[in-house]
Structures are given as C-alpha cells and as structure tokens.
Length: 182
Image 1 (cartoon, rainbow, N blue to C red):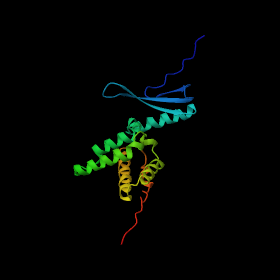
Image 2: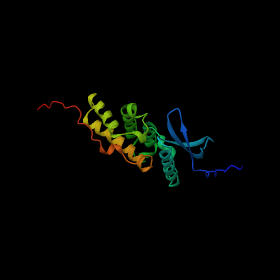
Image 3: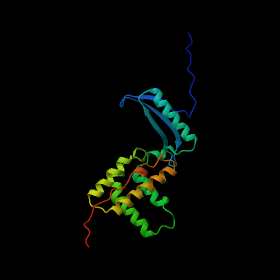
Image 4: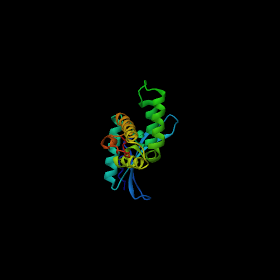
C-alpha cells in the first residue's frame, strides 16, 4: 500500500510550529544571513495556528514591500543613538548635539531605553514626563524632552520601524510653579 505524499511547501514561506514552553503557535521566517554570516529570522506568535500563519504572511508581505523586519526589534535606546548620528540635520552645532545627547541619556533612556520601539505607548512617555515634573524640572525642559522623544519617534516612523509616532498625542506638564515677585 503506497502512502500519499504530502506536497512540500515552497521555500521562503516560513514554518509554523507549536511551542510547548510558552503554549503558543510560533512562526519563523528566514531572512537569509547578515553581513557576519549569522542566520537572521523573524519570529511571530499566535494563540492559534491560523493566527500565527496570518502574522507570518503579513511579515512576508511587509518584507516583499521593502520593510526592514529586523529593525522592529530595536529598543528606544538604540533608536535614540541612531537618531543622534543620522537623524539630526548636518548644520546642527556640536553644542546643540551635546545638549540633546545629554538630555536623552540622562532623562529619557533610564526609563524608556530598554523598551522596544514597537511596544512603546503614549502612557510610557507621559509617565516619564510626570516623574521629571515631580523631580522639579522646569516646564521648558519638559517640553524640550518631549520634543526630542517626538523627533526620535518621527525618525523611526519615516524609516518604517513604527507605524505611528505615539509621542504626538502627549502634552508636557507645566512643571513647578514659582511665586512671582513684584
């Protein structure tokens, strides 16, 4: 009795398997090798096999459209450093660059740095600004920090790392009020 052979799927479509350790269906799409010769893969997960397959198909289509799928794993810290190098206009003075770098590294990166850019929410940015306002930073400094976060995320949006700039909807707190003297 001959067994019916199942046709082999085409190369480059990705594989979907069940991961018992997390209890989810996992899809992997092979993107080839990087410059160092290491294999590059994108991983998607879903509660059902169909959901994982849909996400895998969406990743395949985004790759076909030219979107860099590996860039979506970047953290806010990596993106901020990239923005300082490539995102600022060439005519920006060295002193301004140093001031921006100092504000980003001291005020934004301690809380936002380890978060993946695609997982960043407006609430995260509002929490950072609220903490800085409670620490006594001026309203002007808070607005500058928010502006830097908006510019970094706009840089990511233009590079198709994120779909939208979540910092656009955030408003900076006023900062501490000082008594005016006549």
